[in-house]
Amino acid sequence: MWPFVRFGAMFLVAPIFSARSIPVRIRIILAFSLAILVQPKVGAVPVAEFLGGGWVLLMVQQVLIGVLMGVILQVAFSAVVIAGQTIATSMGLGFASAVDPQNGVQVTVVAQFYTIIATLLLLALNGHLALIEILALSFEMVPLSTAAYSVEGLWQVVLWSGQMFVGGVLVSLPVVVGVLMVNLAFGIVTRAAPQLNIFAVGFPVTLLVGFVLMLIGVSALEPVLPALFENSFAFMRSSLLP
Image 1 (tube, rainbow, N blue to C red):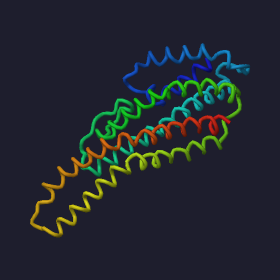
Image 2: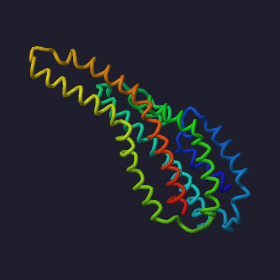
Image 3: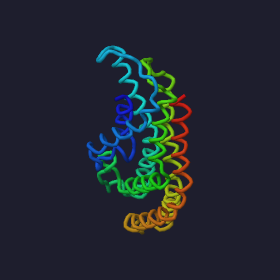
Image 4: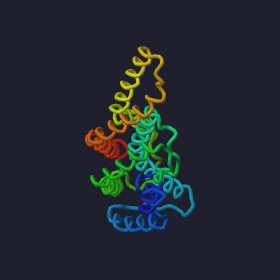
């Protein structure tokens, strides 16, 4: 039961697994199957009375570990969403939004585009398998115990959440800087020719330049996103699972 609880908690918040397009029944079957596979690594199970204080504390610990591991990887996808929102705002596409199937909220189409790229890249790098492997190893690194999880580990996760802003800047910086240069150029043109309707000319040009920079910048995502995913997995191994 305890591996099932830990895997199930991770599937509630982890990217890809928590997508609304994946039925809850599939998640339950997958969590149960993985729990059977990792059962030999669980080790000794502490004796706790059902619904007693130790049992509840053990349940909370398993849920907390699974949720925190999913949240750590979710931070990397939040960085991609922030980058897409920033790019869309700079291009003038902040009004164009769609429902994100990953989280079920309204995001810009640019953010959705980058989220799809990040999802495909994570699957291509077998990141979903790496996440399951780390969670399986967590039973050796954080064995079942009625002891409370350390506050220091929770605070490290809070500090790690700042990485989504750093990653968002790294992903969006090339496009945002390019669009900013175009806006500066139009500002100079407006000062030189005040009769020019800058709104009629500037908006299509800004969109075109933004799309071209996005197309060129897709190749630049190859070193950024894998590094962000690798940092997430490294943080799981070193800090969350001491």
